[in-house]
Image (cartoon, rainbow, N blue to C red; front, top):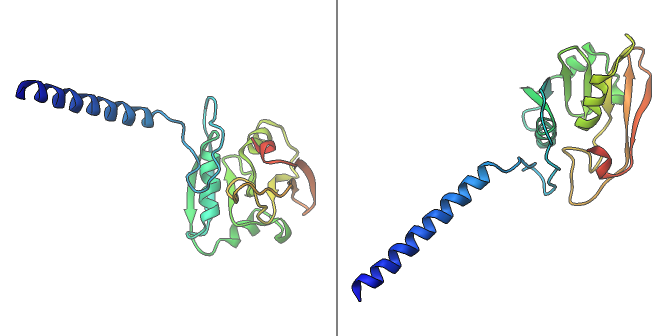
Length: 182
């Protein structure tokens, strides 16, 4: 009787061990999610290559961290520069105050992406050819529901602006729903 109880306990132990090992292995292979909000973004299909962005932000900004997670999960590799006083970068890149937001990303070729610009539009922009009067894209302020600004299931439609050196802009995209961002 002792032998059969021992075999059952040993078999149960081995079964639990195998289940735990398999469960931990499967978690390592899952697609990353945006852990700073309740919203889970669709996983990026394939990353043929990553695009480098230098991101300038305040050290305490949580929405900036969430936006960085968004772009890093969608084909970008961010190098983050956190410091309290970075308006000089916005001045240097000719981002007028009315187009500013909480963080500024700069691509290797010098284009700026101000605020919560969805990765989809940054990728689209980078693939296009632009005249010399274009400096980049902006999502002014911090629209609720934009990448990094997720609050439950709320969403505020917004525009992505194409910024020009002379301070003017054109509408680059109208984002009417959460799904339009991906």
